[in-house]
Image 1 (cartoon, helix red, strand yellow):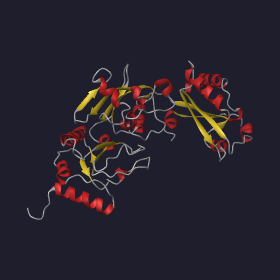
Image 2 (image 1 turned 90 degrees about the horizontal axis):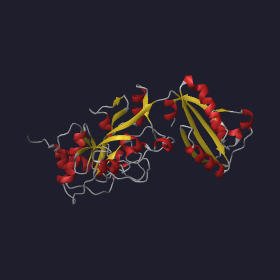
Image 3 (image 1 turned 45 degrees about the vertical axis):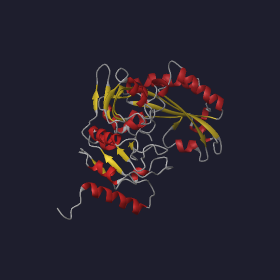
Image 4 (image 1 turned 45 degrees about the horizontal axis):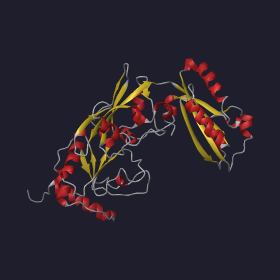
Length: 362
């Protein structure tokens, strides 16, 4: 019918208009290459208006404008798109990058002139999170699901993953493509050590299930592989019984050697804390005054006399998990562990919070 443009033509015109209005210089894929994507039969869709948002990440150091953003409605959408790009051959300028919550630092979730796959759209599609109990509890999770949502869902069953990142508003596939490290790693390893199975879309567009016993090379390469061996579309995460409460502790050191030796002693001890992390503070605002809004000092009089402005300090952050009926045992275990440490005595602060409140503290 006259006066009506084909979808592929509209696709190309939108892309060229976006580039012109944005004043962005980039390599533009050939029109027929871009148009070929419009011919794919998808459960989801391609979009153009959000391409500038997909050209930014948390590092804020790179800005690479993609040609389009794929909002997959299924794993099949991702596989079909990857396969189409693969069949274009090595000479094609089109590339693909998976993007979770965009917390990459150097443009790893961007694709200049290519396609960014918005993995969070997959989590909202037909692939659902499923929690399994029994002797070996686990949860099957879409790669675009946020860890905070995994936590909320597993807690309904009294379970939780064993290893975390300090910030939970990141996607499962994103952190598993890196490592996923937090204060539980000294006991359970990073998050990639607590995965039983993966579903991967390979660079050829094949959907492959892999585990330590099945397609193990792909399994171990993809965990921590920065997306270079495929796109993680589903993960099976090991679970454990979740505690209800956490004793959350912070102590300060002025001596670096004492700080590191105490930390090493704690992570190698047979009976120790459940979470151990250390960090450096260059204090200019009175850190203890800030902590008073959330933490209780063991000795308010001594803490008020501690002068910290301008000093380089070293902090140990520690937790002990417990259930309310185990509070007395927890108090004894924490007291015995703290007696072995050489922190500044006036800087012991602690509070009791729910397990959810501690994990979602950032």
